[in-house]
Length: 564
Image (tube, rainbow, N blue to C red; front, side, top):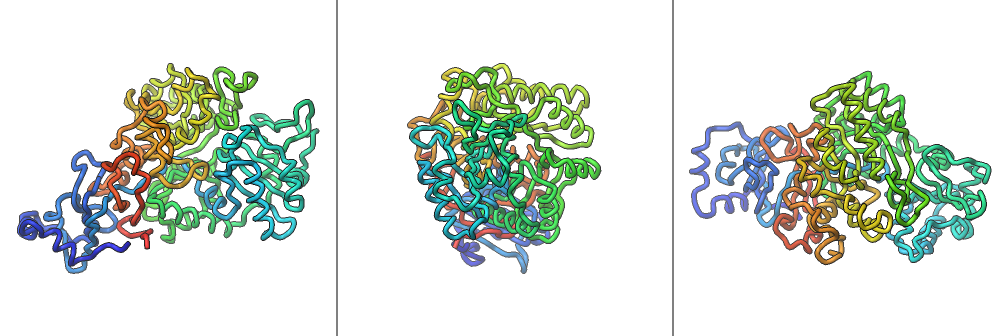
């Protein structure tokens, strides 16, 4: 839908009085490049939380207020845009996502949402029909928790259905994968191969024969056999992901685990203006060369007209809850012999954190289980004792299961929980089985954390979840899934208010990336990043939030997506 332009804007602004007379009382301002009006504009700025219009000059907001006062910024070349029946919010920032993984998922076979293993196999068989013989078939999204028996699959049925192609399918959380026989053959996997540190090869009961499922660090045994993307393939995948993000109203993404190759491409895209997203790059700690180069160069902010930030390192502590790899203080309630996996030893995390603090870099560490979260909090406390840093903004990515004793430590240490609200409603059908009725109360505990005074940086972890950021907004305020279940919400005492949920995806997310001076609200001086919605997510009934659609996405006052 296209916005109505100057004439309707002028008529609407003048309704009820002489707007130009009021505008003359405002001191003269240099003309704006763009003035936008809407039924309601939420700024996420406490000084003026709801306004009628914003004015933009040189990609930044110069005014947010009434229609009448906005006219003081009108000049001969000012573009006037009106969305009289729409709502505008600041550009949404996904504080934890994976752009390259999304780009790959868009080109690979998608098995997310499959309710049976047979459905997964059917989708792979369809892809095999159009794939040259012998080429790899890659995919993502299977989740055994959706299936009737809830058990990990074995490769047998997949190998029979697709014998001539190597097939490798990541689990929905990215912490396990399924390989068929041909893929394992090419990777040299036999019963003689040992489990690597921080990983597990699932084997048939009573033998060492691999079933085809590889968990956490064991996945590296398979991925090393897959041909790497070329630089051009990587570039196309990243651009496809950026376009998809814009389509859903995202103007910023904290990319959690960027390689040196991807970082190089992001810089090229930012410098050329082709990057229509503000990327906060969290360099993968496993890419040693990229880490060393970043530490040598130092933090870089707002590269390429404010399109790229390079000042954060991503580290991994444990696995995921869905694949029982999250590190727990006590064994899993539904797997008493298993307490999860440590993907990295605490000494490694401390070494990275200490070096990063000395170099002026932030660290965000993946921790899902209560043992994983405690380890990271302990390591951060030690690193900060070694390198006192007043404004460090160290983060824990996910922070899904926290022991009650550790919840106050986030605020005490100044650690930001970067959480994904939609994970709670995706995991709720089985999370209590994993954790039991007492421990689950420390899971996805947003209100308990907010009560201590921390900010929560919200996100999606896409492509683990769908890109749509309103799924996390809805989950945050309702504790319900996309079908508005269960009635009243799952452990509803941990809900956020709508104001908190909006901040978690705008101003709080910007703070988590040291960007609050230029992003996160429609305040004068900040980039004019905003989203036009066809409904008011702050007032519509909760069960209608997810009916809301993005009309347009603006980056620096320029439309980077418009709905036809």
